[in-house]
Image (cartoon, rainbow, N blue to C red; front, side, top):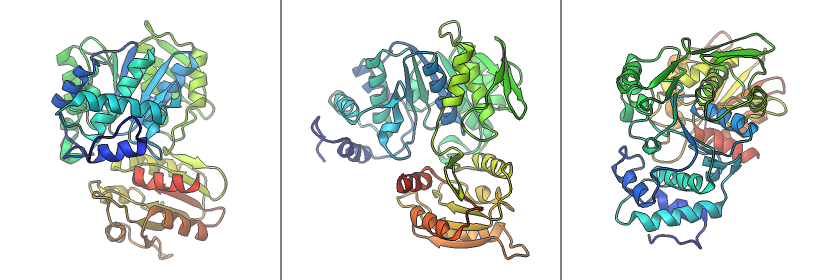
Length: 429
């Protein structure tokens, strides 16, 4: 396929990029660093915050963006994957980048890369960096895609780095235990720079690496913490205490941990980027992040959550149990084949009454029948013959079947993959 031009659409460019490289995930920085050098991307203005972690990265990034915007700064946000539109990945001052702006950067990368092959993620990350450089931002917030050490985002020399959590995921790329994975993620830390870790039990490998390189390590429970009651919460760090904070607009018990990571980074950078307390309050109230314990308006109560690994599933299960009483809970679940579906499903024992399992398409998609076997293996039926299991060809068909069955006072939860949630979100919007 010949390379698109400036006259081609974003959709055409993305189709081209999907087939450009021989691997969809190709860990390593040699190729992308070479292209970045050709694009003169070794640095751009403003402070850069890099956010890694198994779960909580996106929510932490969204809170940082909302607070810095509330404080009047020029802010760029790069995240992945997107839920519906690719443009969601690249935001400038709270607004998704336009098709035209993204295509222009794709074209520039295509001209610069020459013989060097780039993966979809490498290519699109460089486009975000070019847009941020051009915009002359005060702060760029950059979410790591996978791991840390060999992720494209790690070519940036971060002014502050965050690791939100360390758990088992992407075993084939990162390893099968927290110590190995923690070391991979710790490589986003930089010597002499603030290195935030909001995992309450950080792996020794992360602690040792931060010490070895001389990073300024901020640990949850030692250098920052939070407490709260039903009405409000407070955050404390080395810098001082912030009292009477409203709970973040993002729902779920884990969001205070994510907010604490964001506020620790803001405190660590305070000498360079002052943020008034009122901006913190305003940002927390205004932050939005689709697909993270997102409750749709209307009845029955419908929750969308991209939880797709055991750690995220445990958080979702806890959040569901913390809600008020519902006669029955229906789940639409679709998962990818490289995720630990057995562990995920077991987290919902006694919580989900009716499983509406769906196929996911693509080379990594898992068949609903495989999920059904796991539900029946790990979740034995109770006296009411629950849970029940049904199989559907895709998330939308499953969701519509649930909506036809559930009563207004029941609860629906859609989870298991970004693909599952995005399909339902696109269907209902």
